[in-house]
View (cartoon, rainbow, N blue to C red):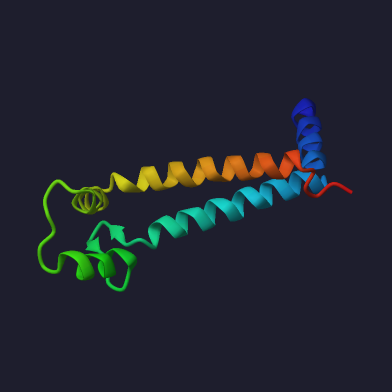
Length: 111
């Protein structure tokens, strides 16, 4: 138990460093921003969300007819099947990792 407490204290000291907090903050903010940006396109489990970019695109270019097999139809299908969500999470995660690595490399949060 003593070793566990020692390691916990070391972890807390590490997390208190300004550069570590800057990296964690940049990861959280960038993940959230990228995920919400991708989600705002409007391809979701109930179809095309009203008032979204996908709805505007569909209305402007396809009207009532969306051609099967195209990119728009594929994204709509993936959204309704729930297979688009892991892609969104993956893209957001990779983006957050890259941005965090850049913040770390540029010395973000260092005194």
